[in-house]
Length: 134
Image 1 (tube, rainbow, N blue to C red):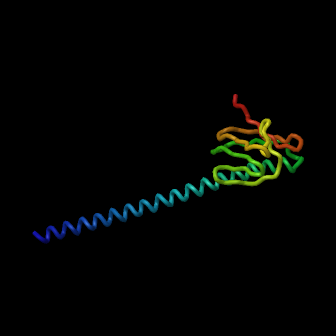
Image 2: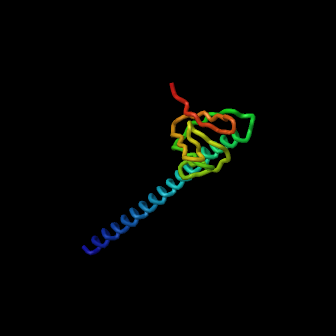
Image 3: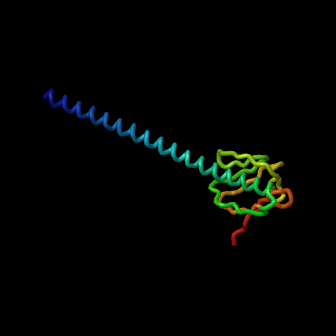
């Protein structure tokens, strides 16, 4: 009778150890997946931030371009004095940015996700205009 009890305890310990290893492996894989997703999000935000800042600088400093279109925002974008902020990523720009009657020099400008915007050079100003969908 003692041998049967001893065997069942050993089997239970082996099962508990295997379950522990399975849980630890699952946890590590989830953490790596989260890290990969976080890095992909930062990369997308950085790319969108760079695109917007580059568009502002191109229009501000180049007489060859007069308008552009930006679209495909996955997040709201904030433009403040000298900076474009997408998520937790910020990019700097040089120029005079406007949206309607608001200047980024005086207050933050918000570009909403899933919207399309014309960027036009008007004099020395770079002006964002929302494209109304029909």
